[in-house]
Length: 112
Image (cartoon, rainbow, N blue to C red; front, side, top):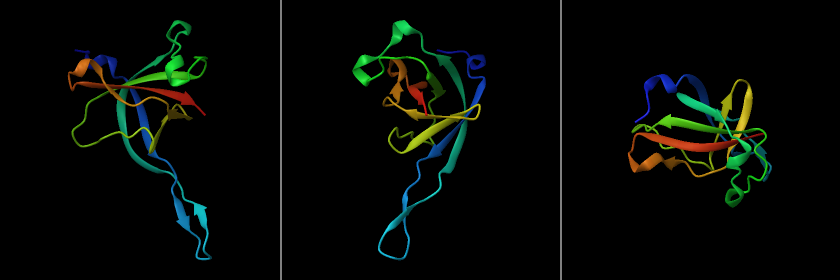
């Protein structure tokens, strides 16, 4: 179990822009929407943790985000991105229920 002091960084979770009909038979790109903010543990990845199975052979700009499991919110890696300190991070891994305890969710974000 992780101490509540570990979750000391506020991270924004945004939805990816969706196509919007332009009225002429085509689409334009919509704007991202802020879904929620969450307090997370934010950790830079070290070179030893390169995850080649998920296409991470270079850990520069990659961050591990850990948040508390929330019943009111289900994070979807393909539909959301994260904003932390003004930078955007694409969620590169499927959010993992750490140790199957339903207490924390861990994901890796790649800086855009």
